[in-house]
Image (tube, rainbow, N blue to C red):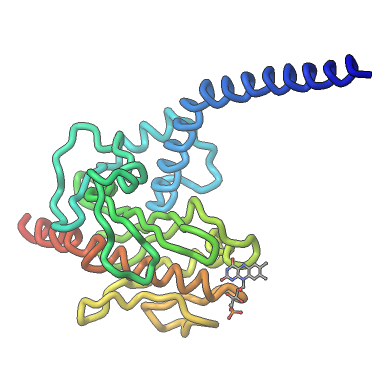
Length: 258
Ligand SMILES: Cc1cc2nc3c(=O)[nH]c(=O)nc-3n(C[C@H](O)[C@H](O)[C@H](O)COP(=O)(O)O)c2cc1C
């Protein structure tokens, strides 16, 4: 009987040992591929929100790279001043990692979007057509009900009209807050405006239906007002003075100067 117990203990230890090696090996060897897939997913979202690729297209790494090379100029932007930071390879910048690094980030000012830290630099994407600005794609994020919602917002070349929104990562409940992903809801964003005549961020998600002639509002999410409010707050933050406002201002004056 004693031998039986010893056998069970040894057998269990051996099985655990073997599988922990297998899992560790898988984690190490798949890390690179996971990283590549994450990058491809981000690129796909940027291309889709900028209307450069159909959402149903199965994009390969090569297709995404070539669409990026031909149409997109990535830029690193110092958030505090809105100036562009020269960089040979902006796409190598990991904004999420920077946010967690005390040397590359700072505490965010008080905000309703639930953003605790801000990276010093943000990665933005200029979409070009015949060498002229066609759209700008900005990374946005903020708290939903269950966690941080990450997305991209595309603005037309007037830097005020919305071309599209996408949320590529969030923890909201499918069918409730998770509807931020649905095309039915996101389609309404197209053509809405961010800033009112007083240059304040006026865009918001309504509770219930938005009047069709309201240029600054989209419909709420039924049964998910907390998520919807989170979306309003994140847009108001990132398009405001602590977000991309200084950059958009610089971009506008740069365009006027040409
Ligand atoms: C299991 C469960 C999941 C929920 N998920 C969400 C969610 O993802 N987003 C959200 O805003 N509200 C969610 N709610 C509902 C909120 O608690 C809250 O009632 C709702 O946001 C209020 O929105 P309403 O005023 O449009 O009904 C969930 C509730 C339950 C019970």
